Image (cartoon, one colour):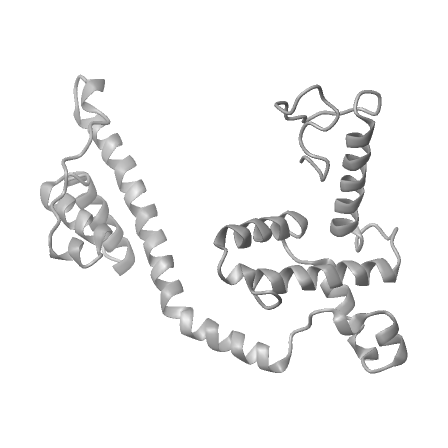
Length: 238
């Protein structure tokens, strides 16, 4: 946003953060912004617009290789100890390539010329590529993290279900109350006790069990819905 010249370059004092500059008022800052915009365009769109040469695409791929290895602490290792820096670089990566780095995909399609003089002349030997060992390691990591991914997916499903039950409870409350008092809706639930499940880290399960025992998760409406869902799943009329 500011560029290498600083936030208030060319102003009367250093207290202003310039978000809009023009060639007439701040020519130096305007030139910096133009350079930054063109550089971002090169990094993001050099493979999609067709305006750039293969040399430019390789240069962007080499930059992406350095950025990715720096994020993972493979070059200087600073990101292994500086989490804020790593998050900033990851944000930069996602800003430039939110889905995939097209320059990587393009240069990897040229790997057939690996070992030829043209391969080294283009600088493709400096572009990051996935080796067989890295692929095998990635598969092992995915296999090891499968139980954790399953836990996360199950928890997301539970949260969705609880949100639906809260909505159904509210609708049931409106249907059963002859004269609905808006002051009775949206009241905070009572504080749950820190039982054994809570102390072991099962906060969501502990809360759900206590709310169910107190009838604070929808009561009769939730019971009817559960019976209807169970009946539909088994083929019986609930």
